[in-house]
Length: 89
Image (cartoon, rainbow, N blue to C red; front, side):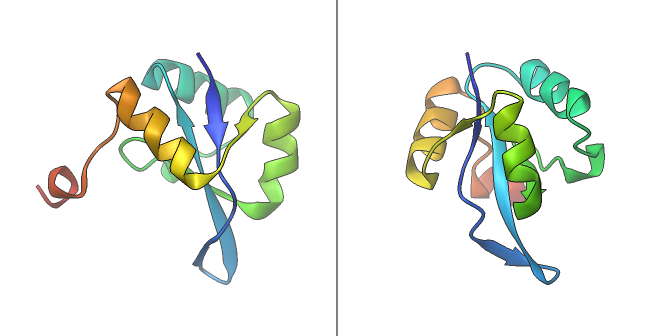
């Protein structure tokens, strides 16, 4: 059971963003986010969007740094992945 974070490569709002996910449960993910001052508004169905400057703090708190492909692979394997089709409704 791990909380994972990928590289901050996603541009938005004048900064770069990473994804924070759990490979086991949303409860684990939400608890980690709460404990590390990640705002609830950053949650997007199966992940939190976190700004580049939060990466060192989240890694120090125990998040595992992985590449984007590995993050998606483990999120899918966990059964927590929300697909693009599901996002569209």
